[in-house]
Amino acid sequence: MNAIACHGISQSYGQYRVLRDIDLTLARGECLTLLGPNGAGKTTLLNILATLQRPSEGYYEMLGMNGRTDRDAIRARLMLLAHGAHVYDDLNARENLAFALALRDTHPTDRDIKLALDRVRIGAFADMKIRHYSAGMKKRLALAKLMLARPDVLLLDEPFTALDPDGAALMRDHIGERVADNAAVIIATHDPDKARPVTTRAGQLRHGAFREIALEDLRADGAV
Image (cartoon, rainbow, N blue to C red):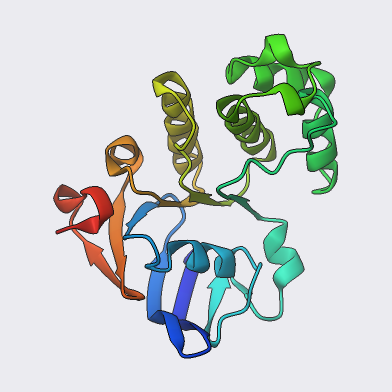
């Protein structure tokens, strides 16, 4: 069974067609790095797969569930790391993680939360309100949330943005662990060099159309 199967996915906004007849399958244990220039439709595709918007045409299946009718069940099995860190400024790191995971009916122990924060190297700031965090610290907090949630499908939109080399390595290590644990991962990025070590497949979106590319052709913006 494929983790993700897209069948003729298209998305239009008025006369502008963002995605054009996307057919794409991704198995569990695979990591697809998705390239393309700004406006190519990468974020739109991830938002559709994350059940945040419905495609204008076509449909998809995820983990054997229908993206049209099983949205709640799909949401319980995936996580999207979008451009923003999506954290609560008036809560501290520990409170952010406990609250966000409770929304997923997951309840890590205090020790689990401490271990995750220590692993992403912001444990010393666990009691600091997030409004005082830098962008890189917020991204590390988002990574700690991924570590605790352990979703079966991971959708990452520019996951290396705001991370220094050490943070990028932590992100990459976690992606590799999830792939080894049979999760399916899609990375949309303009920085394929950082994604390359964990990439098992590569693809390009250009003018809304998808095509698979060879791993050796994995370059910025899919310029092959």
